[in-house]
Image 1 (cartoon, one colour):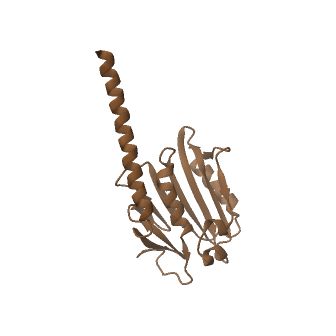
Image 2 (cartoon, rainbow, N blue to C red):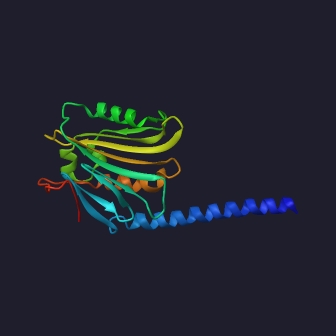
Image 3 (spheres, one colour):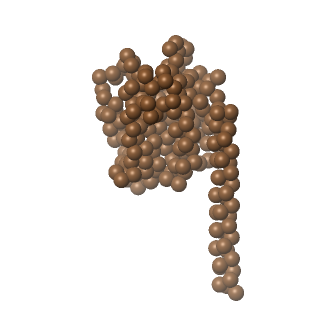
Length: 203
């Protein structure tokens, strides 16, 4: 009798896990279909990005903004930064310093790197203007023990002394949940010739 109860408990746990996975897939499926319809434009300096409405802006500072999923409490966040005045520093060096500062080490066999703006962006003006780009994504280890999925873009425009950093960080298991929306958000960014005085504007 004890063995039966034990197996029943195990099956109930498995059932709840399966139901949770199905629910998550349904929600994500709906979100994928409605990404453009359920997004608002956020102006960030010289660019505009579509931000899905299920992302909650949780923090904002001078030249940066942070989003999280407060409805689901996924182990995930995205941050967008703009830094001024470092045109002489190659993006590769900036990336190296950023990874060292955050103590992030990619798995070499899993990491993917892209440096072609024609691949990363859809808008023709963005492809032309942001010719200096780096995207790195993959599983990684942070602070020695924490396993994460990390996606980072570094972008610098023509005749711009500053640069953008866009990053998405999650647990390995949650990497496939918001990662596609983060990628869609960045790929749809649009270049603005006459930015508004405030760095961050929501429309």
